[in-house]
Amino acid sequence: MSAKLQFSKEDLMLHRQRTFAAVFSASFSLSYLLVDIYKLPFLSYFPATHQIVLGWTPSTPEDGPAMYWYGWIVSSALIALSLSLLSRMLPESLLRRIPVSIAWIVPITLIPALIYTLKFYWR
Amino acid sequence: MEWLLEIFSGSTFWTVLLIAHGLVSVALLGALTHQSMALWRPVSPINKDRSFFEEFRAVKAAKYTKAISVLWCISFLFGAWLYTEYRIHVRIPIEQQEFYKTLGAFELKEHLVVFGLGMLPIYHFAWQHYQDLNYAQLRKYTTLFLTVVCWYAFLIGHIVNNVRGYGS
Image (cartoon, rainbow over all chains, first blue to last red; front, side, top):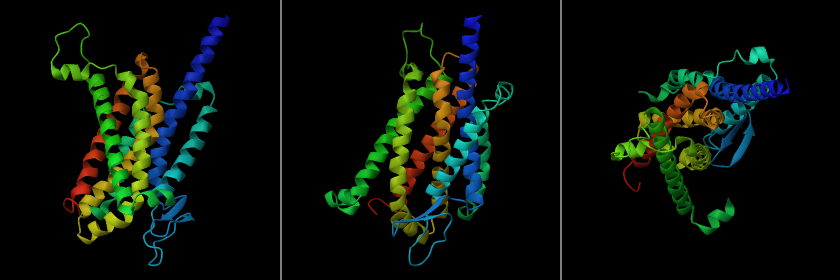
């Protein structure tokens, strides 16, 4: 009986770990694309002046070009971490329903959308 | 940052960092290619008379996982650091020369390596349980994704480095 209980606990731990990592991968890529499209970087960095401003800030002639890539990474990491932590708290029945394949299917299906967001360059 | 620039002149520092980024990427590329080949086209352990290509695939794929995860992170950090210099001193001249497709391919690389970074925890998990057949598909596709992205990033990095001619 105790051996069976121990196995079940281990199995549950494994499922939680697996779901955390799978949800992180899927939500990180999805939120990265969304924060790019909707201009929601956590910060904007101006490499010419080494200035960091919270949120999205446009490039200016004084400060030079703004970089949002770092901000997108921070925003999407925070969103993905929150969702992955939430997924760890799901009841076992729901946990088992989350397919681990979302970890690679979601990023791959988002690639055409990523290419589309760069349409400015394809001329 | 300031103390580093005091030791090296500005351009020497960025050149050293670019070379280090390139070397780490070569190691990552090799490790990922070995692992992918071993996973997708495994070699029979019975066959001892192996060709060069079979020997290339006859590695213990799971042993590469930690190294790949660490190398991906190091390469990512070096690349992220170089990106600031790229934005000012590389991208603007390339824009002026209207090599837009090259810039687009580079921006796509930046996006894809971020996707790869987010995939590392599940990739690591899949390989931690490499004897578990339930995760065979997960191992295959996460490894393949990272390998393809790494090759793409490596090649596009070279193209951007060379687009304006050697030493420009």
